[in-house]
Length: 306
Image 1: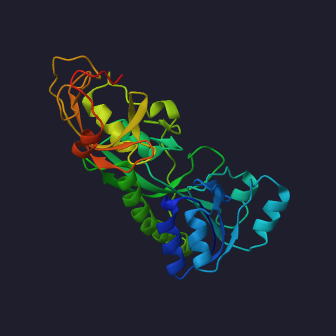
Image 2 (image 1 turned 90 degrees about the vertical axis):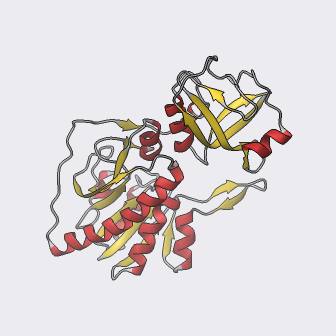
Image 3 (image 1 turned 120 degrees about the horizontal axis):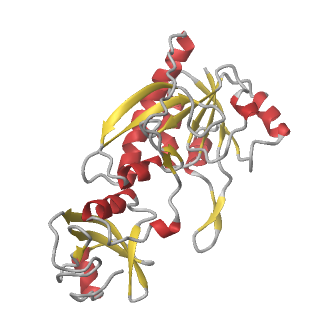
């Protein structure tokens, strides 16, 4: 098949590389435009654009796809299908219907649970023990399209958001190739999504990154895992933001107020149970183990981290 690929972050790379290595032809790649990054504010291309340039595939970086001229430019490519993986732009109906087989999307959740922008983070933050990777036909709704293939995945207890994204991206790339083969051979069977169990995965807002010690230790640890390593869950102490990158937790409650440091190892009381940070990061510094952090930054027993 002749394919137009649309994607931007690292999560999209396994699918793109799988398509490039397959018998199919990637005609063009759409990705978000380069953004200023770092202290020098130099323009930085997306991970997907970097791969595209490595393989000499033409790249388009439109601000949006609502302009009729952009739609005509897309149609002129003469593809059979669009593959979308974390692109970051809304696709209007004219784009979704530009080619014979429409547009496929890789979505990392067990649909209809966690439709939306941040399914991996929301899944872990909610304490879900299982998720999935789905290949669906895109329509004008928010992740409402029919599903052709779905593979469930049991989330290991200490897996972080970044780690889960990596696993699902790899599995999704294999599922994508299988889906395209089924479509090409006319054997694909599309299944409508149920509305039962529907939840939305809104993007992670800045104020959500701050740890609420009035939650159970289980859910505090879930937030830490979900947001690790970036953007990172944090607490404020002495007017400095301290991110907890990894932690352990115990469900046994201590006789201490939520948010209180209860020992000299930075164990912190929650509403139920305690959190024991194992890897932390000060603003503008590298990640370090908690023991090393405490040698250079004192957090006395009894400190209030609320």
